Amino acid sequence: MIKSVYIMKENGFLLYSKNLIKDQFNHDIILGFFASVANFSREALNSVVNIIDLGEYKLIILPLIKEKLLVAAIANPEDNNDLINKILRNIMQDFIDEYSPEYNPKLISEQKVDKIVGNNLKGKIIKLSSKKFILIAWLIVAPLSYLLILLSALFTSEIFQLFDLDRIMISRTNLFTLFIPTMVLLALFNYIILFILPNLIFGFLIVNKKVGTLNSLIHITIVITLYFFTVEPLFAYIIIAYLPMNVIAAPIICRFGYIYQRKIFLIK
Image (tube, rainbow, N blue to C red; front, side):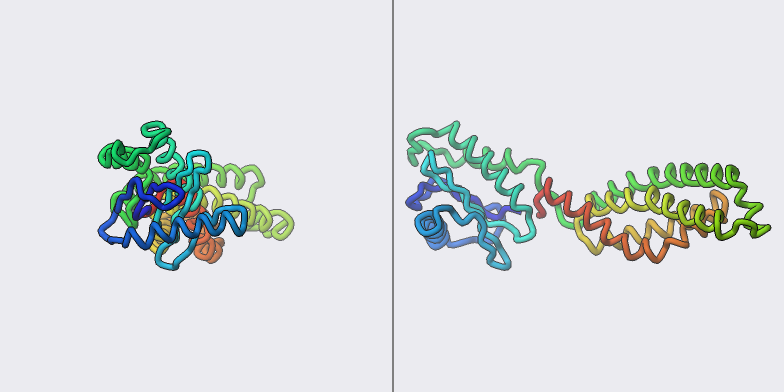
């Protein structure tokens, strides 16, 4: 998440600063650094360096040339840069609406700017590995998975009847030309509807990648168990056929959900 926010004039004169975490940063050094980087990059490169990666932290500098102001932030290196920039721009728009054009330090209320910052961060921070979000993920995935299993079983049963796959499997007639290709397509269909969406949900809501992947593997086990005990056991083997691929693909699919989530939320 954003750890600190600074609003200053182009010359580095501080108008507002706020530490959002317990860590304390040396304002004098940071402000001088922000102003120096902005001025140097503007003069030498004709543009302002926006992001500086320092490993444990990253610095975001956003110049407002017309207003001759800078807004800067210290943030987690994993936070989405576009999201941070959007939040900072919104903060500055509210700040400009309130104090433009003089930006008189004597008239700037810290409490008012605190409220501006808080309002723009509201609803955009998610806690890492929150048990609440794990519970929410399962409350969504559990009933959804059950409905998808019923849909999968119904569709698979219809395909078996349509192509008379039971007879083909027993007689072995057209085994390689019809039965096996159809089973492969059925397995792929079941894999898509049963695992891709739940894994995206796990990746989106369960912020921790390892915890998301673990819950994904638990989900696989539950789905196969439900197939054995609630629908035709034969269909479970169709799912098992794609099990190795699912174990490999689950973390990747979770990752896509995780990436999308980072575009919407900052991580606390």
